[in-house]
Amino acid sequence: MRELAPQVLGAVLRRFRNFSSAEDAVQEALLAAAIQWPDAGVPDNPRGWLIHVACRRMGDHLRTEIARRRREADYTIQTPHDDQGSPPVDIAENPDQDDTLLLLFMCCHPALTSASAIALTLRAVGGLTTSEIANAFLVPEATMAQRISRAKVSIKNSGVPLEMPSPRERVERLSSVLHVLYLIFNEGYASSIGPDLQRNDLAHEAIRVTRAVRNLLPDDCEVAGLLALMLLTDARRAARTGPEGELIPLAKQDRRLWDRSAIVEGVALISNALSHGSVGPYQLQAAIAAVHDEAQSNEDTDWPQILALYSLLKRMADNPMVTLNHAIAAAMVYGARTGLELLASLDADERLAGHYRLAAVRAHLYEMTGDHAAAISQYRAAAGQTTSIPERNYLIDQAARLATHRQ
Image (cartoon, rainbow, N blue to C red; front, side, top):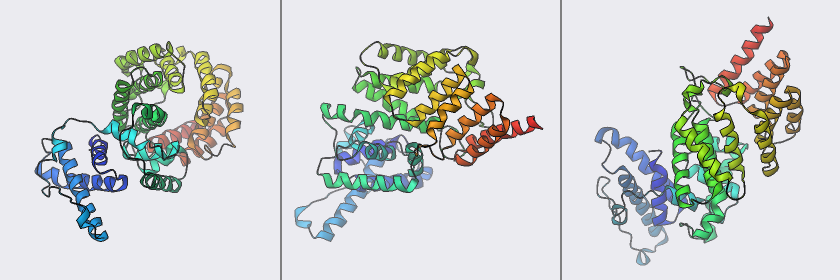
């Protein structure tokens, strides 16, 4: 259902051009499937079934609106009424068409700011909750809920058709599209909320759709860079958790569990991309991931090269997470004290205020200096700030380990 939901929404939007109503209709169709399929079985064409039911719901909604406005004479709406019937003709003729890519570009609408377009697309394409999206943007959940609601209203009031953009418009929207896919993958690779460290369905869907974007734009180096970054990062998935789902940090992972085929593909992609055209942020992040993945052990990691790459990335992107990772790399090259000094600049950054990652990194660096009391305090602070249960448990364990060591 997660894979089909954006495809169904894209198909319904393509037909009815009303985002909010289409989203409601798709949710109703998914609910109908969740109720009926366990007993009746999954249909031969589940996508067509969902589209058919969602279109029927849209028809019901439109008829209600037409009656309310007394415009029956101006509209004729004909939709099937049997949830088990054949899908509409235009859907049946293309049962294998995947509208996810269409929906992705449609949501990155010119009437929206980049931040609003990305938030709306994360909701529609990624299926992320408002809370998860708020975590990705480092803003309160209420703020994000208002942003998504305003985005839908802006599209409705803009008068700009909600349809697949032209090739030129696709290029204009590409930056937002790639950022959406990046955030969906990140939520899949390291879930910000709940009992699971990873949500493989989200990560795999982000990779699948990014491959589709690359097929659409095969010469774009940033698209290749993003796909490489996802592959090189996802390659470590099997080694990131222990038998009980506990977090295993990069330095302690069993690298024999890493997916070597994904690493080979990712390294080939980024190597080719870096040799063509200008270098962008996703290419630099992929290059950093490649340095990690090509190291035979944690001790063999080329930290000076990683620091140089983060220094370039820091000049390109005003992102506190980049600054945070740059400080980690600097600590590995020049010592933990240097890293702690660099972290001081983030204390005044509202985007990272109260975020567990800042306290967690500071704790690790204090531990490296031997200041275990400060490290324990920061580990506990980070544990209280994260909404990820595996992250919280890991941070609590680190604090307990150091406390035991001090006794």
